[in-house]
Length: 486
Image (tube, rainbow, N blue to C red; front, top):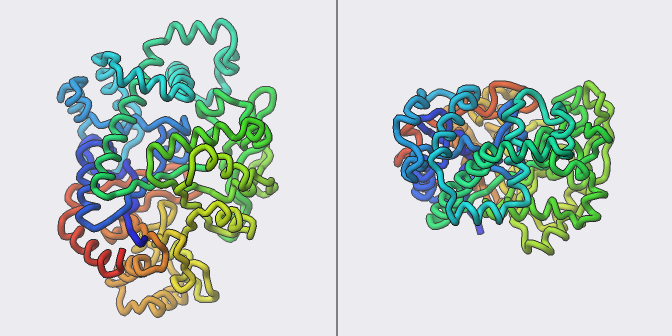
């Protein structure tokens, strides 16, 4: 069934307290989506971010970001007073993550001080025991030693053994409880928001990063699931090889999975990860899907990604095991870039949707699988993703031959209509789903770019301004949606 939606991270919602949350503005955005005739809201990963503020590098593959907990809803729960968080009010500029880190937890600790465990909290604690305790202990230790990753901790804490480790847990029971409290309220607010979206006919598309961060509770709590040495340092790390865009390749640094060990346990960690994710979202986009077919391993000591090697991944066996446990998997596979036939075969055997990115299509020298005349139904069409510039900025970056090609292909007569024609090319596509970044509907330029891959700093900061998602824009989007039978 044809449908369309909008890509907007939770962090990019408008909010008077410096970053988007699961509060009133999120509900208003869902109302906007419904008024615009949309069926999907695509978000980025919701996990607690680490150094660099990337939602693809988080402290946990299961936990939610405490920054998204809404203060006004905590006030309605009797846990905050307005004067507790008025100091957090900021202007409508980009997200200042350092300010959030320095100040937001102070407010949340006030709420925790007034919280009394209830039945719902106790049930949440039991239902999420497989990851919640480890995450809470991990964050409690990190709060004591915030500089550096867990591999720099004292040996009892690093290796999770001995009297000193258990003494820490006993002594820090309140601090551990604080991190559990944050997860309880994140999940409570998120599930209420998702239910509201579903009642409005909106499905949530989540994003599942393939890799996890080395500095995460996942690796610390179960090191045998990763390729680590006896001192728990990575043997090799993740990245991608050199290509036309990156002559040195990309050195991401994530630890690599120990798939042999995971297979012995019927991929139970992956099963639980998908089970949890599918309880949060209606559909999942798997980032870096090709890693399940083959992943690029780079020696730990390497300075660049030049000398890595491709290693076979778990393939269809992993997805068969997950499907056995969880049933049909509503998955969008990120199948972008230079891929082998084996990757496409794995995607098709699993029955997953692929992706078509229009900004990758318009090379005047060649045909492309991303050009609309080559699109297929079982795919999602995007003008660009979070890793691309907004379409207005993309047009400004094109070479004269490529610009002439896209103008002729789409029938663009003047620059002022270029972004609209590009959006309509995605909506008219044969793909079952079309997802448009919010920046494109607003016709914003480079100032609204969300992320520039392989760069650190200045990313993930853009936010909506109040009034941008208005009734006039909703009516225009709705008209286009009806026109193209979305």
